[in-house]
Each structure stands twice: as structure tokens, then as C-alpha cells.
Length: 168
Length: 298
Image 1: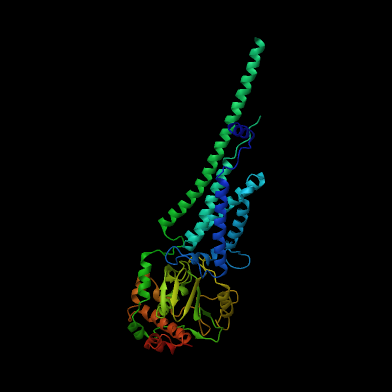
Image 2 (image 1 turned 90 degrees about the horizontal axis):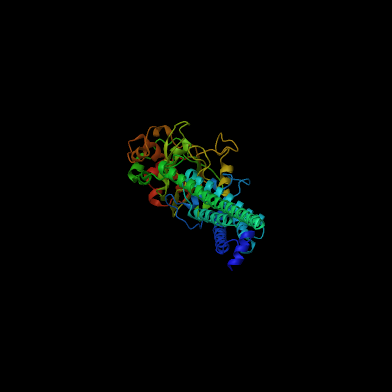
């Protein structure tokens, strides 16, 4: 066992990613997919059944019906809903996080990391909009934000732990 | 012997080279791990800074929605005694709702009042006090915020309430309020397509004299297709120099100019709402102030 590991370490082909990475990333991606699907459904049905407080700072419908629920902010066909963009994002991320796709190709692995990096930037923009533009916090949206950042962390750590090939 | 020494030297060199490679690889690996934790740390720090700035400065758009005083002001505005409304009657309302034969607008089986405004707009600022006071007689408000109109427009910094994030429940009438921009004229609420169609259709001539297509007039208040109001119902100048608390208190004093303007307009708006609700509830729609103001409806 130790011999195999040593040999694979030296050739940069050790078991990658770590055993916990594939299931954790996939579960997080599916969770993000479910919540973003729910938010998309609520967006297109007027947020009438959105299960969230409407009192005080926490007010999901104030966020999901604001102009910042579109990108770029506003309304019209050139302003796709953020909820829909989030759903499409998590569809793609869920596919990229399918356990059998890890380590299949370097391109896919980098695409997964890059997609989640972009997702984190989007999260920062949305948190800024909630705090400084809308003055309300949407808990469902926050759960998607947390999932995105944690998933980025998992994928980034996995990439960082990828064995480096050693010149022979 | 000399040959053996050279062999050993080559082996030592190879080992050292290999060791150097392994050390270099380990350094790269550590650098990669640190860069990942650095990136995650940067994200966390940015979020913490935003939260810290938010907590330290309150609202970024100067909309003090979390001000503890908001609840007290809202409570005062929504509890003007019937005796005060009765004494005021139409007061100094100068621009009461006008009758129209428009498209019916309902929600959950109830006639709907649609309000469209902007937090920067001083006329909207004036109108909200009256709309809130009027509708509080038909139902219950929650989560009303406080804000002021733009500092760079006429009637600067007019104190007002905000419908952004507020909700309203009533057995008789539904209400949808949208603040399309904040006080810095940055986008805020977006109208659902059905409400946007109403605004597009009735926010123009001849319903709103002088209104231009593509430039919706605000404040715009559509009373279920039966009445329409655009512009402030009274002179916003009566609110000049007052705080939110001053306005709310003055609404309880029938001798004040604020009460005559705001409560009088609220009576006129109540009369328009009564036309939607078949004069229900009776205690509101048959109130002397509302009846007196109904005569002012055009």
C-alpha cells in the first residue's frame, strides 16, 4: 500500500481528490440546485408562497422582487432573473461535480474551479446589493451564497492538494 | 578506489538533486494550499467588512428602515383618531383622486390599490403619509420603513415612509406599493408585468394630464380602475423642516397645517377606496370626514 502510494506520489497520479471531496462536493451542488430551483419557481410565481419572514431586515420577497433580482439590475428581456441564472449555474456545477468526472481531464477540473470562482464573485455582488441597495436579507438567497462559497472552498482545497508531478 | 569514490559522488549528487526536487515540489504545494486559504480568507474578510460597514453606518442609501423610531412613527400614523379625521374633513386636499373608467384591478378577490413611486421623489414623500393613514382604516400595515426624499430636488429631504419591503393586509382591499428607485435614484423595486401594464396604460394622457409616454408619472395611485391619483394630494411644503416624528404627532392635532393637509388627503383617499369596497367597512365609509371628502372627488 505504502509502496503504491509512494510510487503514485512521485508520478503525480496519487488518488485524487481525497475520498471525502467527491461526495461532499456533489451533495453541496445538489443542495444549491434544489434551493436555486425553489427560488426560480418563486420568482416566476410572484413569490407568493415564499417561506420566509417579511418583517424587519430579513425579508425574502423584498429581495426577490427588487430590481436587483435581475442582472443587470432592472427589468425587461435584457435583464434575466438572478434566480434563473443561479439555477443554470447550479445545473452546470452539479454536472461538473458528478463523482465520476473528477480527475477525468485537467480541463474539466479547472472549469469546475473557475465556475465556482465566478460564482463567488457573483455572491459578493449579491451580498453587497442586499446590504447596501435593498436593505433586506433573503435567507434562502443567503443559503445559496453559503453553499457556493463552501463548495468553492472544497473544490479549491481539493485542487491545492492535487499531487505535483516531480521531474525525474 | 578512485573509481568507487566517483561512483559514490554521482550517487550523492543524484540523491541531492532528487531531494532538491522534492523540496521544491513541497514548496509549490504549500504555496498552492496557502493561496487557496488566502482566497477563501479574502472572500470571508470582504463579507465581514461589508457587514461591519453596514452595522456601523446603518443603511447605505440613508434609508433608516431599521430605526427603532420607525415602528413608533408608523404606529402614530396608523392610529389617527376618528374624531380628528371627522374634524378635518377634506382639509386642504388640493389634488384628490379623479374618477376614471379603467381596467379592473384585483388581487385575491379584492379590489387593489396600486401605488408606484420613488424614494427620491418629494411628491411621493408627501403622498405616502396620506396613503398610509387612509389604508390603515381598512387594514393593517407592517414593516413600513422611514426615509426622506432626495436632498437635491425640490422640497429636499422631505420626511416620509417607504413602501419598499412593507406589507399590508385587509379584508376589504389589497395594496401593492412599489418604490422604483431609492433616494439616490438607484433602482429599487420592480413592478410585476400586470402592474407595469396598468402604469403604462393609465400613466399617460388623458388620464394624467401632461404625462409623457415612457416617463411614468409618480406618485401614481390606481384605485382598482375607478379612481386615479397622480402627484401629491397636497402641498409638500407643509412638511418642510419637520422630522418624521413631528409629522406623525401633528397628524393627531386637527388644528395643525399638517393634519389639515395629510388627514384631509387621507379622507379623500379613503372615500375613493370606499367606492371600491362597496362602502365597507361602514364605520369608515360612513364617517363624517370621509363623506365630506367624497364630495371633493372629481
